[in-house]
Each structure stands twice: as C-alpha cells, then as structure tokens.
Image (tube, rainbow, N blue to C red; front, top):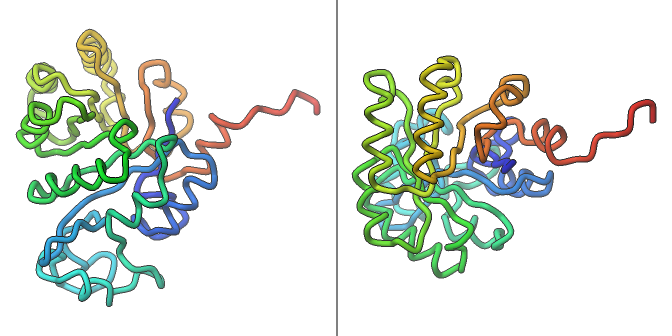
Length: 240
C-alpha cells in the first residue's frame, strides 16, 4: 500500500512546508501530496489556498504577489516553498502526487518535474477535469489522475464513466464515497476494468482504511506516523 503525506505530515506540522514534507519522508511515507499555484511573476509555489487568510491571517491572493513578496509571510517560521525546493528533496524512490490548483501553472510544473527527472514517480492530479484530459493527450509519457469530490453527488457512475474514457493513470476518490457501499463497489469495478489506480483522499481513520484496503492502491493521509506504523513497520510478535 502506498502511503502519501497529505501536504506533508500536516497533522503535526504546518501544511505544505518544507519541514512537513521532510518529516513525512523521514517517518517512512512512500511520498507526499502537495498543491501548486502561481505567483504574480510566474513562479510555481506550493500552497493549497488561493489567498493567505487561513494560514497567515492576511486577505491577499497568492497570484497578486511576487515570489519575493510571498516570502515575507511566514507559516510558524516557515516560508511558502517553491515547487523546485520540494522537488529537490525527492528522488525517484519517492512518489509525488502534485495537485494543480490553477491551470496556468500546469506547463511550468510539468517542465520542472522533467528537469528533476521525476517523471516516472510523479502523478499529476486536479479537479480541473478538462485540464487533465488535455494533459493526458499532450503528455502520454506522464501519469495523470482525476480528482473527484462534490461532483459525485449528482451522477457518480456517469461521471466516473466519462472520466475513464480519457484513460487516466489514476482516479482520486474522497474517503466519504466508501460510506455508500453499493456505489463504491460499482465505481471500483469500473476503475479496475479500465486499468486505473485508486488513490483515496484524505483518510485519517485506520479502521475505515482496513475496511477498504483491498480495493485501493494508495492512501493520502494527514496522519503519516499512524499509517506508516500500522502499514509499513513489522508488527512485533505476540508476547514479545
């Protein structure tokens, strides 16, 4: 089972910071999940929100700041990293799930993944389904995944069927989907028939994981240490 730290080890450290990513890898996660946006001067940076309100208490958009201006804002002493900074601590043994939050950073993000020679170990995903469909056609050598969430409320089977027509590497499903067993089983069957992987976000409940583990390929979690200890480390012999 692949264990990915959601925005790094974000249960313990500030999300999407270098320390959060480093700690996730040090603890034994297979890799990390992160979010990509662009600055005013075209740098690709790692941050989930479009503005700094939640993390810094400042009502300013990331896209309205140059990277130098963005560096002035600290997250518990940490600066918002560039994509290059994060790529520099990875190697091809680590799995990277890079979520594109803004379509205009996609081309540069793919260039950087190529430059760091992490193409084979990276999955690029997005809720922007048109973007992912275009990228699949443009870069058949790379791995792309469709993120789905609220859209599943209307016609989950129809949506999954439509997205699978584009032949993605992976489908990224919310853990809440597994609370609807009949729909879940149908969707898993469709995805497996299409030959795609199943990534689950963002799952922090080990008991829930144990109910679905045989159906999925990767779990994205905030609770990196909990999942690594349960899934990656040998269990002590009973009575030892």
